[in-house]
Image (cartoon, rainbow, N blue to C red; front, top):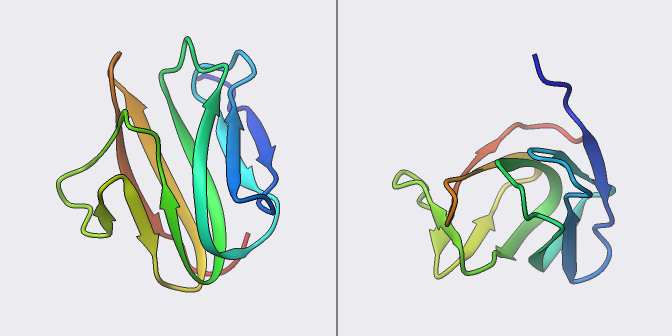
Length: 113
């Protein structure tokens, strides 16, 4: 079993930079609950196999992803590279990298991180 590497992401700025730091499939955890618009940026993701993001929102949040992110066909909250989280609580966002694109799916976990 592969060891899971946790990387904490500052959720205060409008851009959430996910720095892979040479990890292949890290888990990113938001440092605090937030609301509003955020943009995701990737750093050091050359050897990425995918990622998992745990974020908490206090009311709703619109998160814009890079152009190489595609949503799973069942993801109704996705439009034009924006994932809109509308409930209070934590969300798990999983994206698997296929060598070209990340296939994204989000789920509401309930509760807070």
